[in-house]
Picture 1 (tube, rainbow, N blue to C red):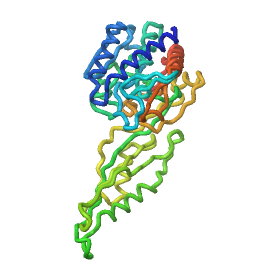
Picture 2 (picture 1 turned 90 degrees about the vertical axis):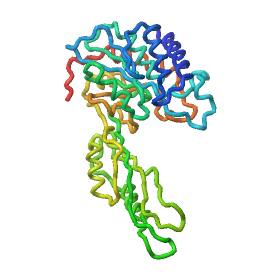
Picture 3 (picture 1 turned 45 degrees about the vertical axis):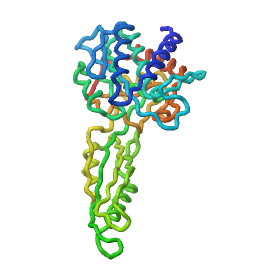
Picture 4 (picture 1 turned 60 degrees about the vertical axis):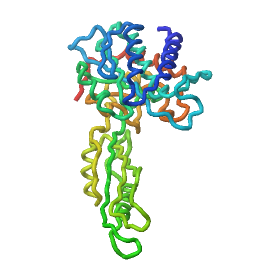
Length: 360
């Protein structure tokens, strides 16, 4: 592969993608664009369901293990402090600025080019590429909807900005809506039961409690109170106080286990929005991880959530760019990062052996 030419082609395609707004649940136009490029420009046999697109290498055999290459189409909304136009690709020396350039356009297109290169190469495994929707909101019409439409997957390589280091675990997410109850009364008199004071006790517990099981890769479970609401006016003792808790789980606990234990410790009413986004991990002994290590990559644990939480099979997160640029003003990707990613993806997957998988 001519990596210099391929990088320029990816950058041109990414610049066109940046100029198509593709906020979560509004990816239709971007999906149309990618479908046209995959089918017409690159001649790939591309399948589509909603805004999800996938293509399967033509030598597929159910007797072989299957590797999924996955990245997401959608972006968050642009921050207010952009100094560039977030919907106009701006190239300044090595940096390409634009919304979704780092998260997740560079991974999306670099993995697509790696698939194009590898689909006719001899391999001991099947290869599938999936561009999925609604990742930024963990939407039910994204990868969760697309995966049952694919052949069985043994392992996934998920493109997210990690500096091309392999994330072998990532924290899960559970959002809790908590309500402390009291009794209303007149603030001028000694009456009522202030719900705020009950909430303070529970908020202090969320702030200080230390979960005993600490992951060697992901560290401790993290709980953060992020929203608090109470009261209607200054002279009324509030009878309810609501607050929201962001819980980032490690692989030592399921979200359901955390919820049950939290309910034993706090007095307020606790309601989970979902249990579905659990922590995920892949063993260091997995062939995909071992291959990355052979290429002098350093495994680490990621604090940020991706669609890995919705995968029932092992997955490793690895892609160009830096997570610290995601969801920020003046997001960008370096063209040199795209070149490095394309080199590493193709070298890693060319030498990959999945014939000794021992998935749970």
